[in-house]
Image (tube, rainbow, N blue to C red):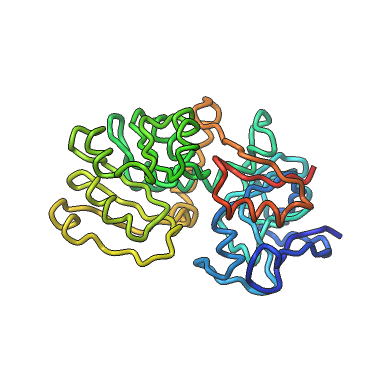
Length: 330
């Protein structure tokens, strides 16, 4: 038997329950992992609330990211064996393969062997944030040294990962945050400029920093009315990636700016990378290289105990964190 996290109805964090279930037997292409730590993501909050891109099948498991030790493998699994130290890639349906619990069953393609120097809390904090940022900025955006990137809601784990990826290729990172209290932490994380949106105008700040040319890429987690300002702050033929919806307001299409500048404005999710075998392998190689070289370092904001799982979800919704929220089994 294993204790797992499930919800039997959508709603607030109180719907998250601990259920005891039989340990599953891996199918031919599946791997059973003894979980050491779990990384939380905004997607899981939306999933629990019934607002995510994927609808839960109740009662539903939850969770995209975990680190742990391989416990059993399916008959056709070739890359992993019992005892391997691994972490999960969000390349599956949470409703079927949610990883939050003492054990997690996942497809073989959604696992990566992790270097021993990366401890479980950080190993559970790698793939959602870095693959999300990598896919938009490197795979699709073709970011190059000397270019500028505007990263909104930059104190999130994906925001911090984006800053690190931007700096790793020699580009400039402009971060936004609503709270002045987070400014120093974002500068320490590598941002070249931090715009506190409660006190400063995005367009004016970007134009001063770029000497009027605007940013080459916008990596936006907010959407809503801010998209008009983001378009005004973008350079001619620049790219805007909308990967999140922290704003629940309608998102206007900035037609005038898009037309006059020839902007490329697109919706984006990490699944565009995770569903393609070649692109996923390139992304894994890029990120593992950065981890090995020490240019990509997962920032863990706070670690909760397993019995504090609801509290960890509440903390995620508070937006107080800088980096990743982790729940530890140990």
